[in-house]
Length: 607
Picture 1 (cartoon, helix red, strand yellow):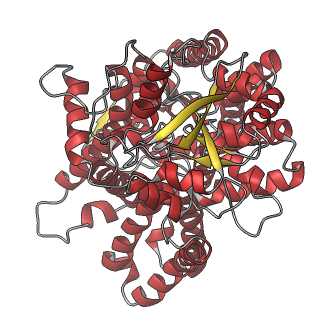
Picture 2 (cartoon, one colour):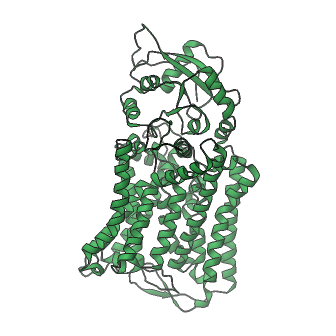
Picture 3 (cartoon, helix red, strand yellow):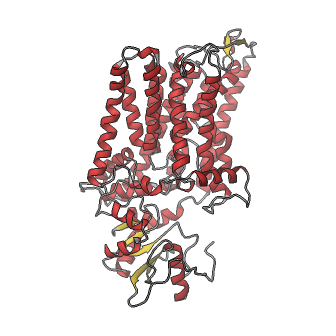
């Protein structure tokens, strides 16, 4: 009990150390340095939905372009702080993200320790995670560690709920017997996990196979299906019906705008990651580093999950047996079948349906936890002789063997046992020194990286200057709203109506207009007659552009997919602090529109 408590507290402190240290040193800047840019879409919707009967990004029309659970939490926080108190809303979201990730990670680490019998493996699986130790820090230090999921997105809710779910599954072998209360409990946690991130709903499918095929549920299958499916059907069905009632689409608009067959492009990204070349390259034009971390975050958890599934299936008895019998023989087999199966299904869905450029580092929080759990089992076998020298002469598991150790088990299919020679007692102290030293180096390296780089500081400068920017826009374009080609920072920061130009948090009418090339016309008719971007021009527009070049930049950088290109552009306001340019657009009268396919050569590069 004491050992588990110390591990729980140690992981908790290890998670909160970098973000809280950054907060003490930098104040509100810390939230920007940890949050992903898309987090400001959540914050903008939360802010503008206060006092409204629906969720809205622009303050006028309903939207559902978000994963619901985290948005509901932030909406409650915004109602408490008030819609105009951006700083308290921002800091509340940051501290809540830290708390949820810390608690969820600590529960995850405790579950891993009880499952493997190794506190060392559990510690490193929890913080920073084996994926980050293996590849994450090399590909992109900002992403892949447990600290990086303090991102203002849905990840904190996902990690918190998954930690609780895993700890419950480890301590109570729910799928061994058809106990109604236990089935309802895990189905409730799976439902909340799905509401936190909708494509984690694939985790709901493997338990149905276990209930349908396991001998433990013989004679109680119908009742067990009912107990397990009741909450998901009610919760997820209610969410989908609410979407359709308020917005007119069952699925979030963000999913509808990003979805589409993406297998070809995603395979190109894989080839380019493994072999950067000029023959087969991604069509997005991203650099190798950008392509690689997005690719690896999909393929690495998928590979680990498939390796475990195939290894366990290959270890099945040679005599004829039911298909799932290798996964149903013990608690850990059932548990990892649920988790690995869900991870594999989710990865395959994203591989087929979501182009890599649309995936962010927050997509795979649960997938990373599952893969770290599987790797921890192997690491536990390696360190067991050094971590538990008092168990000399006891049988320790070879790969594929079942073992029960003091309340937590690293169980697998039956297999041969091997005896390990008694190691020297100082090896235990050395093992812990290495593990804690590695954790300390990683934590301080991540902290130093946050403090030494300019990650998202352009967003902070914009937000800090929000009052002056709001006044400038109102003076330069009186009565006009802003069409934002960014990830929510304009809508969150400014006290003017803002439309989401990428349409992830738009309404169905605007999304349809964008699809047919009428986004700007629709926005102009709604009174949004200024557009701007902070992050999606590679450098600020130079202040001394001649009119022809200025028009070429507007058409090629913002209107490349528009049917109508017959617009007149002028600078409405240019913020001297951030160099963000707000561009007014008006329809050109009595002039035939230029063909949409006409190429325009810019006299300077935006690279």
